Amino acid sequence: MKIENAKAQMRKGVLELCILSILKNGDAYTSEILSGLKSVEMIVVEGTIYPLLTRLKNAGLLTYRWEESTSGPPRKYYVLTENGALFLKELDKTWNNLVNAVNQVISSKSTTHE
Image 1 (spheres, rainbow, N blue to C red):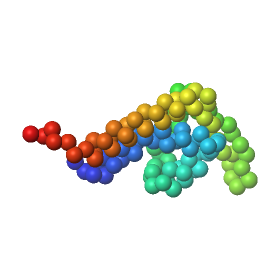
Image 2 (cartoon, helix red, strand yellow):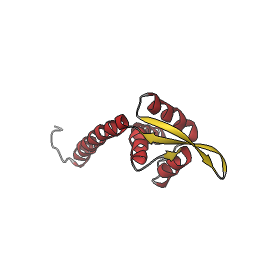
Image 3 (cartoon, one colour):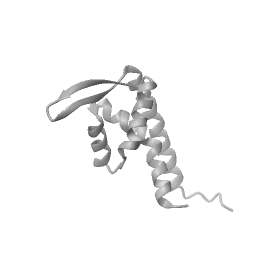
Image 4 (spheres, rainbow, N blue to C red):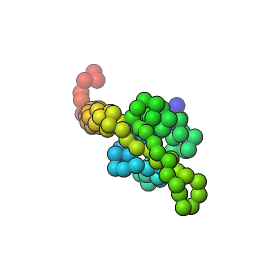
């Protein structure tokens, strides 16, 4: 098994949580979302994020609006919906429980291996 594949799978598993968390702080267009992810070393390519944003929109967790830009074509700003905010709260709880459980397993000095 290659470590890069394992790392990529771990990142993919939390990408929805990260995107929704970014949008919790305000509307954003794709480049801003990508910058937010890259700033914390969650490297994601545009080809990955567009289908995910569409899936989140189709699930009713996001909506979007078009806004004119002074430096190019109009931008699509993604907005967290009320359902998206509720979904994010549940994901946050699950994430915190998962992190705590994994940390307990990793730091365990269990002597159950006999």
